[in-house]
Amino acid sequence: MIVVMKQDASTDEVDGVIRYIRQAGLRPQLAQGAERNVVAILGSPDPEMKDTMELLPGVLEVIRISRPYKLASREFQPNDTVITVGEARIGGGGPPVIMAGPCAVESEKQVVETAIAVKAAGAKVLRGGAFKPRTSPYSFRGLGEEELKFLAKGREETGLPVITEIMSEQDIDVVYRYADILQIGARNMQNFMLLDQMGKVDKPVMLKRGFSGIIEDWLLAAEYILAQGNLQVMLCERGIRTFETYTRNTLDISAIPAIKRLSHLPIISDPSHGTGKWYLVPPMVMASVAAGADGVMVEVHPSPDTARSDGAQSLTFENFSLVMEQVKAISGVVAGLARPIGANP
Ligand code: PEP
Ligand code: MN
Image (cartoon, rainbow, N blue to C red):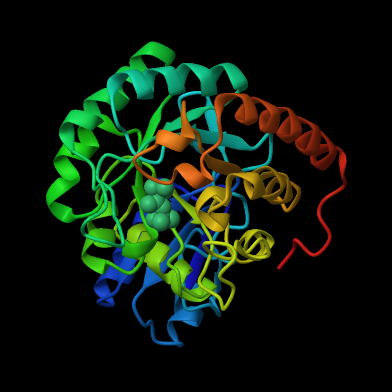
């Protein structure tokens, strides 16, 4: 259930609603929008509360939210969430934000060279893994803090904000110090303890879709973070497991408009992990932008054939620049279109 406040509702009236919800043994969550303030009631409110709360001063209406996820739903917040990091404005229309960099951080030189190249081509965020979740324990798993320092050097040299993965609760302090956006990987989509902790940090979080996560599971995972008070959450489609084996995963492009319809949270696409093959990345980047993605994450490496991780799906600097030209062309076309058909829930 959500309580929509009148446009001219006073702070006292909003506080009164919050107090009322707490007294009923439930948890209020305030979302302050440009046009209206909304208070979500977390928990299982008594259906009769709808009528009584509509009598409280400052309340415009009380709406039952039909979806199991509340704060993540468009019913709760009709306008897109916009997350601003550095020069990147993620969500809310506008050109897609491109996040690029190596799968794994290998050396300071590798990160700085890549950061300079991707920035020159138009990327707005630098990616790189220091703590690597690998399917096999024998694969390269990253070196941790030393590599985070290399990412910080990449940021220092280019001004690009950094996104990097956080794998466990014990790494929160160290990753928080270096990252501008915290990434929760596919393998941790339902690590609920970690999600709870991400809800308590004051930095944006990008939540990747699990291999077998259906869209509802994924939005409920985002709800864990939102319910703890961190409203800066973006989602990332990175491919799901299907019977197909030619590609590493099956990039679910349809998830992009589906998320846009169900949720106000920004949606990023990751065609690198979504396909596993560098030559499939450029067309899937274009498809993602055409489908309305707020951003795209792309793995880029100075020499993909010597990469310690995911070289087969990494673009060279030259190919990344070409892809960025294509992104500009496609996003220009998308921006010129009328509102996408079927976007309204
Ligand atoms: C990554 O982006 O570095 C990564 C490991 O991706 P995923 O969690 O999608 O496998
Ligand atoms: Mn990778």
